[in-house]
Image (cartoon, rainbow, N blue to C red; front, side, top):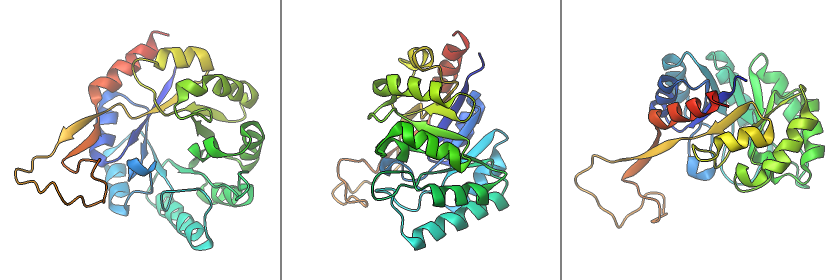
Length: 248
């Protein structure tokens, strides 16, 4: 079986590392500590210029929940248009209603707007009220895939639900496990779920080259998160994971 690997990348550097290592696709995000938001226009354009593999861009105007105001929805529409104008292969969206169901009307409109780009419904799915009803709702919108941890914090904990989703989805939509996947569990997840696409970061920390460091003023107001290190995709880890999948 030929598995596909999507690397969640928070920078052009990570995206290029993913391509070098042999990944099939990049999901480009900003603000990974908030679960990912739409990257800047410059980041999107530079990533496209530097990648020949698939490039999907998350369309999420802010962190927090997935219940969007009309202005936020309009931002999403414009960002999708910009992606289409710049040769992006796919977009990644997720919209819920206040009652925890899928916002099928708005989602379907965004899928139509995005065409011919592929559309992934992201882990907003994992906080919806009913995963199996939501599966059918998302299929009805015309989306191409669902990124999910099986409604658990990490995908290995949700493998049973992911397996059921894969079975129920059939060839109608791709179910792509993501969250908490790495070298230690990717083979088990592939066998347990029957999924053929996987989403992970495979990153490492890179220390800042700053010599002078003022440690008592965190720019983001979160002292627990160091501003003198950053995560980048690790080509060696990605190559290792690809090799593990090839052996299944």
